[in-house]
Image (cartoon, rainbow, N blue to C red; front, top):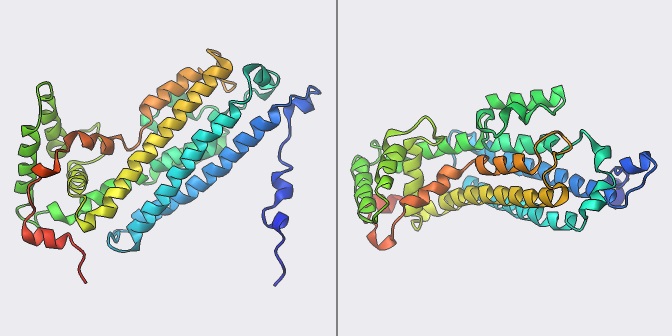
Length: 333
């Protein structure tokens, strides 16, 4: 077996030779264009890793049975935690780009048209794989308009594939503990939880009782998680101290943190774009920071899980589980 040489293994000749400055092609070298290119190339490399991690979690949840007590859920939680660590790096990386001033950017900005970060195929694929369907996107009529036809086709093809959000909904629906076949009194017990919750509401929160009905009982065409899935998620959150629910809770929490981290990155990106170009249009023809603000508000994927915190109440008020259910929720040899 031949020896592996560090520069060859990392293909550094390709990576370090991939910075072709447009300003130099125009005979007007702009010092900060090198930084601009490297920052965005680093982003695309991280996007590739994010897709690798998210894709592996999707593969786990595509199986008809996820082993909550075994390695499956542990692996999913571990990899989502890695995703969140990478997203934290992406937010901090914008601080390096902030060392470029607006005038530094103007030295080469107009040479980039119509190229734009809006054309990042990998980021659009990441959003789609997580669960952002085309009808939910801000500015959906514009969303793929700046892509090459083959890239647009790649995004549209993802519409027929199951997303992580859909797979998580199916996983929650399969949870047996509230199903009549496994716990005939489960529905009555959940009704007990409802009464404890409504009894904890204060003046001005009366509408939350109606929201409980919509989310956990009736369902709504505007919601992505079914009533059965929502009931399971709330049950996990309320009884997360039970051994078998500890990893499911960490998994749901990691999804909420993922959403929060993407929102933090979008918010930080908005600040950076506004600082650089003010109210001007983006190089790709978008409304610049205005478009980004719309995406920040509407591109949450797991918001419905975060919303379930509205229906939590103090541990001391939790009804005790029946002994046989409590035993089923423990780890046994």
